[in-house]
Length: 344
Image (cartoon, rainbow, N blue to C red):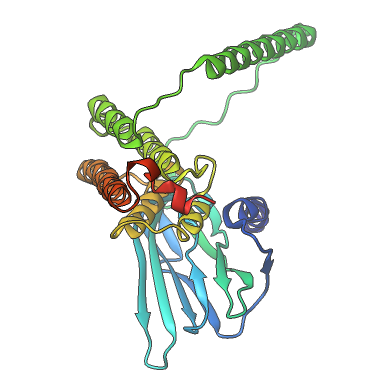
């Protein structure tokens, strides 16, 4: 019964979450199967004890003419927490097909029969249409360490519930109404203050990289990794990087999902390996922010340096384009920013 509830809840979550993560120009069709594509899910153990690690593997085999959009790293994995993961490892088979494997290390601290929900995978067909397949759900049984303890564990029965003689229902109703009114008033005041501040906030006219470098320095001083506040660290780090790219290339990216962000920037020529490095950073940050992954402190420090290096690379490219434009067109026709060439 519990497994069925988890399957249903997983499917419902997929139906609600899928449109937000794969929204694109064309509609995505969810189908039961696609010729030339095979999806396999497996675990190394179907029965575990509380706190044990499970290796959950997703193997996708597809024709080389079909493009795959990787499964969302922050996908719902039911009652399980992500302790570690191995990113996509893509290999080419002798028959020309491509095989991609992703491995998650999962754990849980509650007992019962559970199901790792199906994860959606998006494919771009040769005719440019997009189709979605759901990976098969995987049942997992989590056992308690007390099941074989026998009579050695002295567990006393629950005491009878205390019954109040007075009826406090009306007091609860009045209290709830007071809390609702207080919360509504607080939200209204907060919204009005925020709106006023947004209207009065001065526009920062400094170059985007100066703003980004200053924010990165402030983030470093906060020492979130030293306090094990990795989720707060990656939220601020990715917002700084997104805000910088939005200012440079005149794209509103703050409300985009990671896949929408990467799809948008595929059309923009970024210097060197900036696009690939950005994709790896944002996907890893999604794991920390939404899938409870706890990174090592050294990884957080290296990602902070990576964002600093990416900002510096784009800054150098911007200044190089500016010098070229001044040399070719003269000061009177100088382009003020490379974003004028790539903005929609």
